[in-house]
Length: 272
Image (cartoon, rainbow, N blue to C red; front, side, top):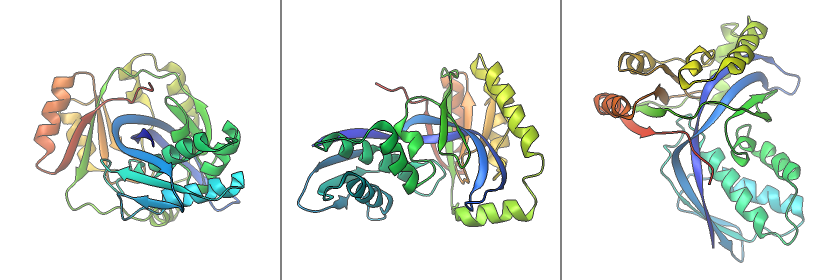
């Protein structure tokens, strides 16, 4: 059996533009993994099966797609131990799928090349290729074109999942974005993102990144009031994150905000 962590992610910035010819939106997003994660185990099996999380579809789809691309039968048993909240904007399903892909690929007699594995991941979901790469990444085009970023990692992250929050479908979130003509000024916001990334030397510099074009939350303001130097919604939500320079302030904020939802204190995920 092989086992590996499947870390969550936050979007440190999410700039969204017009609808593309392929029906997806142009985006520019800064993706950062954090040290809250699921665990995925993989072993050989007579047939493909996924256990541990009854709601899974993405891990099964990813492994089936890998088998088709590699020309083999999908004979794996995947076990998922969940810690990332489901449908929270933290990429748990995508991370599980990427981890399962990486483990299964390593078990193949002839593993796929890095680019071929990334192509399989992109078929499954826009965030899945990101989880195959180390460190923070800038995602462009539909989010699957990735470039590594050298960003500060010396901060703490408070995650808040509001009680009773229900994640809207991605299609509905983008539909509302289009209805309010959210794409206006995309080129300027994307340029501001590039400039802010180039100037980021200290953790506090991440506060200058453009915010989330898709979603907002009053909890971001609450996190700022409790000492965060940056706070925003992750992805399409509903989870909100705050970045803190000091662990004690992060922990104090998390304790206070437990009255409104589940909270976690974590940090950027370090490979190895």
